[in-house]
Image (tube, rainbow over all chains, first blue to last red; front, top):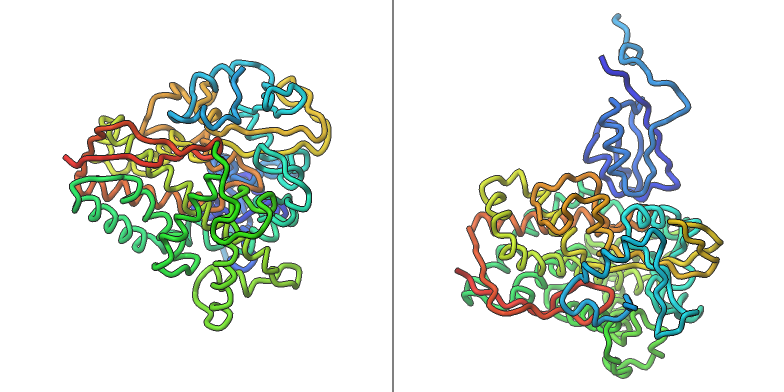
Length: 81
Length: 409
């Protein structure tokens, strides 16, 4: 089972190109009023997808957060009951 | 010594050998202007260097100096400025007014109207059994699409094309008539030093008046209703915004579509693959964009001393990013002169810029327009012949084609 990494988004740098929303619509959504991207939910992705999103973001606003160690998938699961 | 600012250098398209030589220099190359060794610019030709300059808006400014090679006076700079001539945070505030209209999600909504324009253009070409690919196909599609989005009436599309062409002429080698379009403004105060900028500003003003009375579901209405830090756009801010959108949404995609006409013939084997496998449409369109590199360069001005590729750059130095060189950088693109419809998407080409704040606002729209055009060409199994050499636009700034005669076979 692969580890997930947390995504961070710099709202000052984002120019609202929307590549992130195209690639990962469950993590990014473009706020039409603000004209920038917003993170949805816990903002975790598998490393390969995270790298792709970071690479495709033209503004450089998206990064893989380095302040936390990679998180195991099991810890993001909602406990039963 | 080659002068990259000489429009004559681009008379037959991108000067690949010149750029290859400059890329091979481990440092940045100094390009003197008019033989004056003190006056000139740093030529940035490698992919990695262009990405570095593009992303560092703190050091490499779009607001200081000018984004074109020639310098302009401070009063002219402020009179002419649109968001492309600004740095964050002002640039960011203006860009966010319109960015939501150009996201991939939003531009998908234009797919049907784009396709209708593509079909009309190809019908027009077919009716004549061929003709000028540029005036029949490459010009009407992008101007039609951007004017639909802006809210410019169909009857005025031709006028918008004419004015855009006249703006580009300001980057060519011939002087322009200062009094064209009834212009009375000092040319140095006008974008591209072109009187067409004056005409475009007065047109924009008239249209804004109409939309204030009768708002529409279009970008012009959005802009006149928009507020930045509580203020509406001023008349000149609005006019500069309008000009930027019409020019950038029209001229660039037109160039890519013009080059596509040549690619269809020159790289017929590659397009034969797309004809039978439409999953290649996106990468084929991207390769057309890379290979045509519609905008040859943009300039930045260093705000502080810095270093790039073992080269010391002083504050105030002009730094010119030659996208058309970096898009053929062998360090990034394997066999760069080979046209490949399945070229990998990463690393990205820099035809839309090297990233950072000024990455092309209309990139998703341009890509979609090209995909729709190529898809329709495949649907019709359209095949071209080019009986004569194309005629390039006289400019050191755009890699445009004036005329491309084609015969349908």
